[in-house]
Length: 400
Image (cartoon, rainbow, N blue to C red):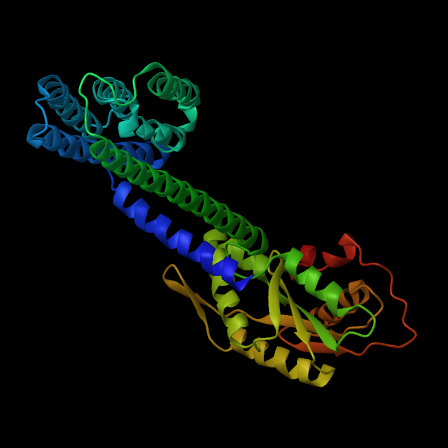
C-alpha cells in the first residue's frame, strides 16, 4: 500500500509538472477551454520542433537528395507557426483541429516518401489521448471523429503504403534509427498525456472534495456568529447520550431583552451584537467544549467530561464575559446581559431530556431577574417529556 501511494504521488507530481509546462495561460481563456488551448499551444510548439529536426535531417542527409520532402516540411513549419498564432489569439477549436490535422497530413506524406518502416506513422497513436486534452467536453463529437481519422490514417500507412521501398529508399540502419526515435518520442508523448490526464482528474477530485467540505462547513456553521448550527450540536449530544458514554453537561443561554434592542436600534445593530457575543462565547470555552446558535438570540453549550459544578462556573464566566463589557454598534454602545440554564446530561440514548431541563433552568433565570446562571441537577427518576416548540419560545413574547 505504501509503495502504491508513493507511485501515485510520483505520478501526481509528474502530472503537475507537465501541467505547469503545458497549461500556461494562452489566449485569455479560463476553465476547461483555457486548459485545452494551452495544451494545444504546447503540443503545436513540440510538433514544430520535431518537424524542424526532421527538416534538418532531410536537408543534411548525404545519401540522396529529398527536395519534395523538404518542401513539404517547410510547408508544415509555416502551418504550425500559423496554428500557434491561432492558439495565442484564443481560437481554441481552430488551434485544436490544426494540432490534429497538420500532424496527420504530415505523417501520411512522410510515410509515403520514406515508407512505414521509418516509424513516422507511430505518431498517429498519440491522437487517442491527445483529443481528450486539447478538445473540451462540449467538443466530444470532434473527439470521436478524430480518433476515427487517426486510426484510419494509421492503417493506411501500415497496410497501404510501402515499407522500405518508398519514393526515397533509405538504408536499413537509417530506417531502424528513425523507427526507434519515432517510437521513443511516441511513447514519451503517450506517457505525458496520460500523466496530464491523471493530474487533471486528481485536481478535479480535490476540487470536488474541497467543494463538498465547504458546503458541509456552510451547512454546519452559522454565517452571522461563526458558531455551529443545530445539526452538529445535536449530533454531538446524541453521541454523548449513548449508554456508557462520558459525563457531560448541557447549557442554554439567551440574551436578555434582545427584542427591545432590535426594535430600538434595528436588526443590523442586533446582528453586530450577536456576532460579538459569538466571539466572546468561544473565547471562554475549553477546546473540548462546543457552542452553537440554537435559534435567534439563544445559544446551546455542550460540555463533555464536566460536572454540574464545573459547568456552572464555566457558564458564570461566560455570563460575565458577555455582560461586563459594552458592545459598540454604529456610534453607540450597548450593555448586553445573558441568562443561562445548565444541567447534567444522562445516558439514555437521547439528549432531549437534558435540553428540556436546561431550557427550564433558563426560564427560571429569566423569572428570577435575568443576568444569572441557574443549575438544575438531574433526578434519577425523572422522565421528562419531549420538549415542544411552544415551551422553547414561551419567554420570547414577553420581551426576554
